[in-house]
Length: 442
Image 1 (cartoon, helix red, strand yellow):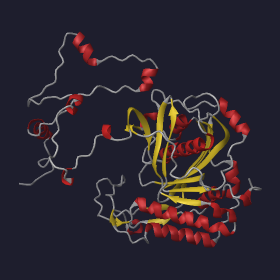
Image 2: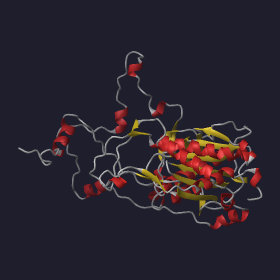
Image 3: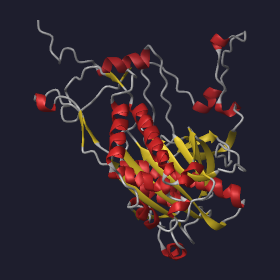
Image 4: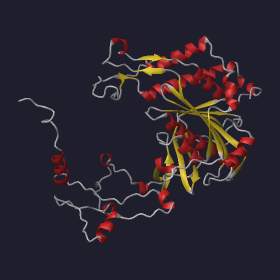
């Protein structure tokens, strides 16, 4: 008798009976979660169970195996067995309520792995920012001053090859799924993980930028901090939004960045209308957590001589879209700028001078640039002066074409194509921004 796919198909009914009967699983009926944006609009909600009860019907939950449904709040009150001795083999992690940074009121938390699904539009509403496409004019003028000769092109190509093939790391890579051939079974592959590829390329690009110190001596004042920590916060509709996590690199300097937008641009932002995400709130993608601290910590001393923010660099190994990453970058620029402003000017709403910070996010082949100018700390209201942000995303340094084993030999193996050294010109322009030798160019 031949075993077919139909005979080998798993029965879902048997799995449900096993879950309900033998494993004694509990499935509590949690109340529905209503978006806060709809509550603020005054939308009236009706419980469907109450409607059924008023109609003369009875609502009950079928339980063929006699499983008892337990209220989650009552379940926490049950006695939990504790080991009689203090043995590390029986370590029980503390509950969130027992940690030192527990708060009764939850806060929205933004981390480097967060996905902002509406991207720049959603982040601009949170950051009270007016968005401009492309790099600021002052940075665009620096792009033309950077010359890419054959030596720099060769170093860039060698940096790409080191990140892709010349590193001795051999780890098992995640299973590949190609939508062009969904049923194809790819062989297990060992190589360099995507996160490590982005880290190697970022380190090589920063080293190449720093090598231009002979032509621009003021670059010697740049400081590169690896794995910088940030824990800052701002208010949105009187609710705290905490920005915390580790980045890849943080570049600081002894002088603050020059402002990206002039006073006329800042004054004109008063009439700018922020994006509306009705019926959702911009905080929908952020994590609500009770364990947080409301502080402004940049991971370095406040009186450090080279503690002025310059550029934040983040690396990604996910499959998020460019718009998602740009939204995350805007929030991290806002968190860094707010922390710097609080240390410089204290608890104020109107800043004497804007605080500027740049951001570069990259994976193994794409670079995204953000230039953020903090003009106001009144982020809990939509009125008044707005912050300014310039975004330039989707800059491919090269394209990595994966192999297609089901096709002819011509495209069976992976290859790198479309090398574009002009992307490095933009990165170098951001790195040169603020150099004393280029004041005449700005």
